[in-house]
Image (cartoon, rainbow, N blue to C red; front, top):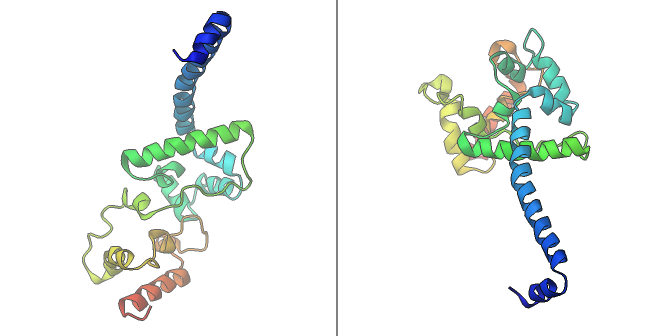
Length: 203
């Protein structure tokens, strides 16, 4: 027992007892509340409407599109296949899920307190791993028609300016071609040209 606590216990034992009880209560509450908030936030983020309620526009528009009968962008097409916002906006495996749960808890606290910016910023940009956790077979076709997917990992390893999946496959743009997986020809060709410039050493 420290000198200060010893003096406090002699001079005012009730005050010491109250302080210890307060500390124990705070620790106990933290042990209960933190996991509860985290689990609740993670559960809520399983629902697209919860994501939209915090992010408002344009995200609420994305949810509206996803609920339409006909897919108008890549994201709404995915929704028709049972894919949720959080499935794309979280990483792979347990680490990805833990990150999503942590983010879900933070989002829930902000939402309940009313202390969140509008429009809400994107806190977890879509990385290639978010796509390849489902589309793991993307590089299996070893022919010319799939050469861009085959070469992409090498390009990314060799250049910080390399493209990512979302540079061609943009989720929420409505000007893509439905018959071509909602690719936008002009934007996709620009990425092709960037890749070919790098491959030829002219980047």
